[in-house]
Image 1 (spheres, rainbow, N blue to C red):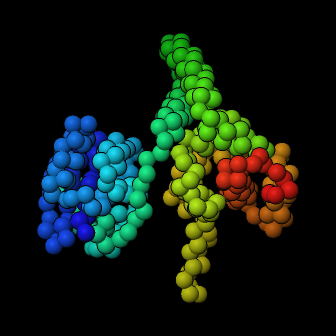
Image 2 (image 1 turned 90 degrees about the vertical axis):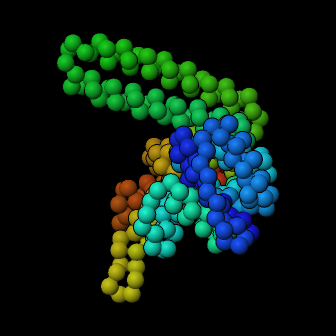
Image 3 (image 1 turned 60 degrees about the vertical axis):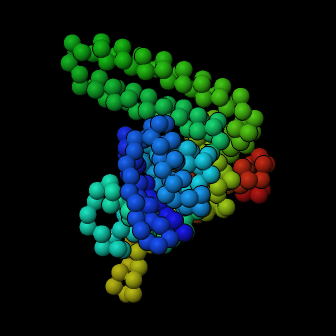
Length: 317
C-alpha cells in the first residue's frame, strides 16, 4: 500500500509518499488550484490510484486540496493535529519542519487506518462560512464596545460609527443565513426540527447545522457529543492519582460556545432538563458542571430529532 502525507500551510503543500517497498518521494507545490492540479498529476505518476492520503485539519486551509483529491478518486483522511502530534511523540520525533511533518503523516497513514473523509454538501459548507462570518462580526462588535468604555472623547465617534456599521453587517448576514436555509429543503427541515427543542432558537440551530455539516457522519449521540467536546476526561491511576474530572475540550469550541446560553435558557423553559439539573444540584454539583451536563443533553436531543426526523417530544426525552 502506498501512503501519502501532506503538510498543509496557507500557501504551500509539503508532500511525502511512502511506496510499498518503503521508498520515499517528496514534493512541494502551491496550495492553489494550479498547485492541486500539479499534485494530482504527480501522484498519478508516483503514488497510483490505490494510495491513501492523510492531511491535517488546519483551520480551513486543507479544505480545497482535500476536495480536489477526493474528486480525483483518492481516499483522503482529514486528521486531527493533536492525533498526529501524539503519534510523533510516540515515535520520539524531535525535528519539526514541513517535510518532516509530511513524512510523519505518511507514516501514520501507513500504520493506522483512519476513516476516509467525505466532503460535506456545498450548501452545508456555505452555511458554515455564513455562521462563522456572523461569529466574527459579533466578536468585533464586542471588542469595539469594550473599547468605547475607556475611549477618549476624540475617538468615541469613530468607535460608534464602527459599531453601527457592524450592526448593519450583522443584520445582513443574519438575513443571508435565514434565506440560505430556507432555499435548501434539507437544511430547512433540520432547522425546524432543532428549534422544537426548548431553549434553542433559529440562530443556534443555524450554528449547529453549520458546524456539524453532515449529521450522517455521526453514528451515535455520544460520538456527536465527543465532536462537541462535551465528554468527561477521567484522570485515575491506581490509588495515587484520582484527578478531578473535566471536559476534554478536544472538540468544536464553536459548538460549545453556541450551546452555552441555550443550556442556561433550558434550565428555565425545558421541563425535562430543569428536572435533570435539579437532581444534579441536589447531588452538590457546581453550576458550571450542571450547565455542561445540560449542554451535553441538548446535543443528544439534537442528534435524536435529526436522526429520527421527528420533532422534540418530552415523553421520549
